[in-house]
Image (cartoon, rainbow, N blue to C red; front, side, top):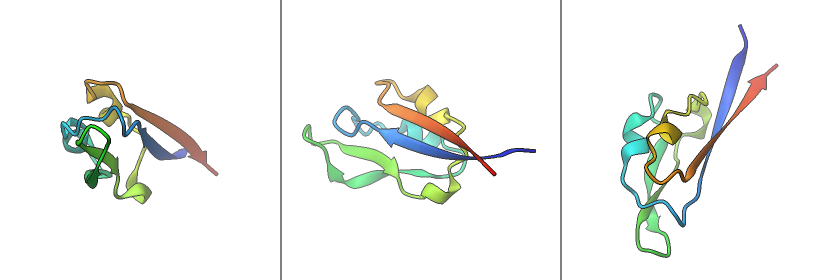
Length: 75
């Protein structure tokens, strides 16, 4: 069975920090940043990068479509 490693890219300037992606993540990869973007929102970021499985649950629930998920097949 092939294993995958995922990576989440968040458009931090469009993220409004709604926390939906953080709650949707089954492996607790995402968290809200302590820093704020230009609009004053605490944006989402990968806090636990090693655990990402690339399931895209975060991207599916993002109301602003500011999350892109990549999958890489591990050898």
